[in-house]
Image (cartoon, rainbow, N blue to C red; front, side, top):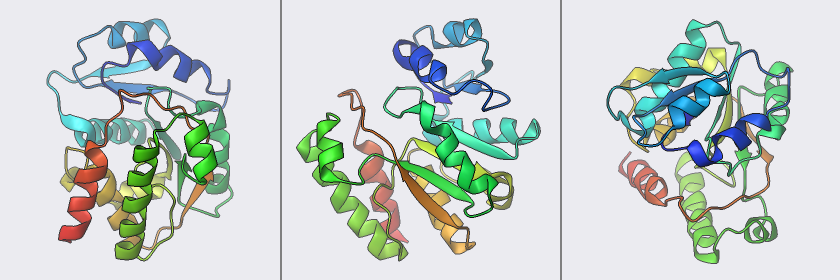
Length: 215
């Protein structure tokens, strides 16, 4: 869990993870100003605190490095903002366990109806769809969402990619996607319900697409 000021939603996200499904939950706090760290410790999570804000990509780098160090075979990344249904974690893990895919994304935008009924503003939905079309065209893929905060990776993926050389900001996800495709890793999606909160931002969508257009 890459976390920043997630105290309001952390507990709900964590408690929805099916019991016994994962060996350990690691939360990396990117110098939050609320009580995210204290709450995470109370919940029994393994907590790593950055002494300074390292950015969205920098946070994920720490998450994956620690998970690999602890011997994880499959790593799930989920934003602790409760926008993604962590009870569906098994659906992302299973295809990787079965050897059918190397990477799984939880997609909130499989259909217009699902996205809008989940509270996603229409403009936000249209923005996501437009950028998905652009990125699909550039990368030669067909995904419904490129900015998912709910993902699963095999150990091989995280060990193969040069994560330390990726951006420390929101472009990290796009660099990881491009590199994964270049290496030929198998990627798929699983539909997840939308839980939209207006605190979320479109910054990573814009930054990610600018990166792809520059490659």
